[in-house]
Image 1 (cartoon, rainbow, N blue to C red):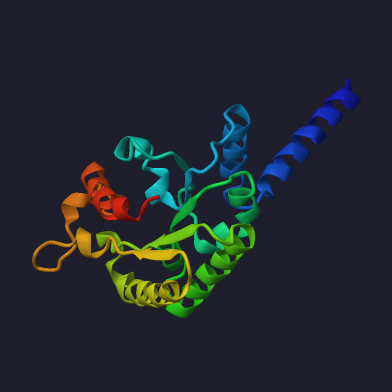
Image 2: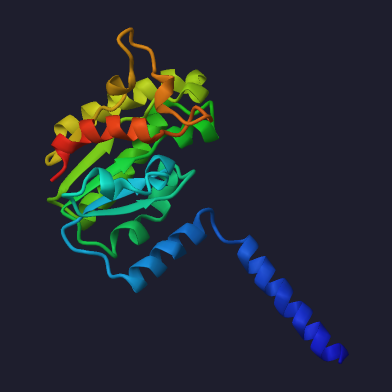
Length: 218
């Protein structure tokens, strides 16, 4: 009886220890794999990759009823996480276009982070995408200026500017600026476009995103 109990405890400890040592967002990626196994992803879709602004847009297909969309955003992710899981985010799919929203969590994770570092993270991701898909459309949505992260706006603005300049030089790319569209007539961020946390976009905010994004979507 003692041997059985010891074996059970050892197994339980091993399982607990293995889960504890999984990298961040490992479970999110496993969930994507499960979804793809249950329902094979369509070809020639628009692939969304990025952080919670995509994750929480659970009804994105309703905003673009004439588009085929695969949403692979996972909340809290940074550009370094997209780079880490690049193979898992790209290999299962054959999209005609990739749209990226990510970057603000990089700054939230490290307030001292410089714009240059985040831009380099994005360039690394872009190169990984181009290795897999050399000719498809690749678009980047500007980092939004969330009211709750006002202190980080200077770095975010600089990052948006640098990524926009980079994308301008690359073929089959667009920088989609949603920041201006989220401002009022006085140039202030519209707080009515955010949930109570003043971080995540509400339904009205996504309507603004839709209007800006639609002309760029294949």
